[in-house]
Amino acid sequence: MATYVLIHGAGDDASSWDAVAAELRARDHDTVAVDLPCEDKAAGWSEYADTVVEAIGGRDQLVVVAHSLGGFTAPLVCSRAAADLLVLVAGMVPLPGETAEEWWVATEHPGGPEDPIAAFLHDVPPDLAAQALANGRDQAAAPMREPWPLDAWPDVPTRYLLCRDDRFFPADWTRQMVRTRLGLTPDEIGGGHCPFLSRPDELAERLAAYRPHHDREETASAG
Image (tube, rainbow, N blue to C red; front, side, top):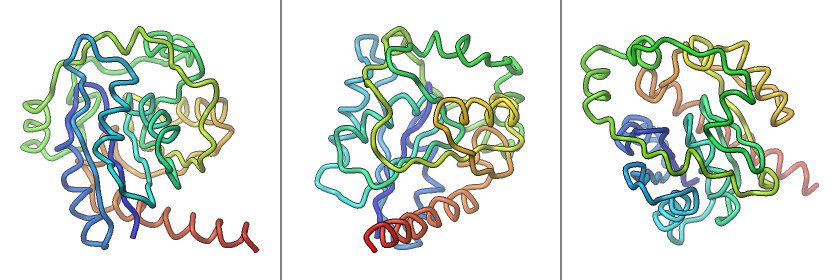
């Protein structure tokens, strides 16, 4: 049994992962999802990571999963907790000393639709999309202006799951960004920027499948 640590993106909340968490628990895994302090104007990356690490407590066999801006927090969590695997789902990949504000220019992000439904939720059922917007929280600027504090990406096996129909992080741009910053060829799933809402069962299946694959890699390395 693995523990999946589910980290949300900017201005989101833990409930966005509810359907995925339920699917993972149905597969006999544990899950942890917390509300990051995104409305706290004084909170920076350390406080974001502290919130997640505190929620993890004494759990082990950790698979840390992060969405979008959560890509800045997840590696910090992996540097503080004994994570077995890090998975970015349409995640941002920071470089040492880079701020989240600088990231957009540095990665040559092409921009996207201004309407939140068109940008993030175009493939989400309308009632669920409306609920997601209603659950949205303010995203304070403090962490966006704080240099990412790690000297290097943590020494944790990392996978990237790209969303092929993502209008906010277009697939071709994301493939290049991931290859440049992580040296990885991303895995791919259908759907837009928020697959935890549009296809939670498929996303959970992909996340659950990563764990056995990781176990096989560890066994091969030990041999």
